Amino acid sequence: MAEFSTTSPEIAENGMTITPIWTTLITQNDSKFVSEQRKAKQVFPKYDVKLKYPDAITPSDIQAIFDFYMARKGAYESFYIYDKTSRNHTKQYVDYGDSTTTIFDIPGKTTSSVSIYIDDVLQVGGYSIVSGTGTVSSDRVQFNAAPVTGQLITVSFTGYLRIRARFKDDRWSIAHLTQLLYLGGEIEFIGLAAEDT
Image (cartoon, rainbow, N blue to C red; front, side, top):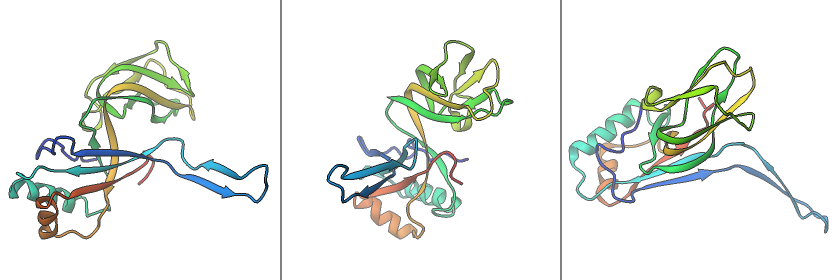
């Protein structure tokens, strides 16, 4: 899967907005004792991303963004993008065990203070962290023994969050993109769950 670069061209200072998105079903009740019921439709958030570029963006930079958009066939193909700021992240989705696989990508790079959980239980030992060897340079966790089939693996860490996303728009021309970026507009990405195709 491809990576959308946030360094070439460089986005504006404070030009990246990451919004965690949850989906909650809310049912209003007529009862005076229970006014509403809520049900979470997802365990982990998706992350929408907006990028704003500086006024000095060049035509070749715009062409590079447009070429990446065309290679993804608009909103069709997903890709990864990293947060530009190293932050603390708590219990992010990694994967499910299958009783065979011992190496899994962590959804981040340049990670530190890494804590691995299996079915919400903190693991003390039994694994090592390998830096930069995963998909689009993500860090990885390597277990001494494969997690059992169906066991949920999550991770807490400090580092750059890797986000799976797609373009919001399916109809761009290079003229539209040029005008958008020169007028200080934002490029928007829709966050995807790890299992989304």
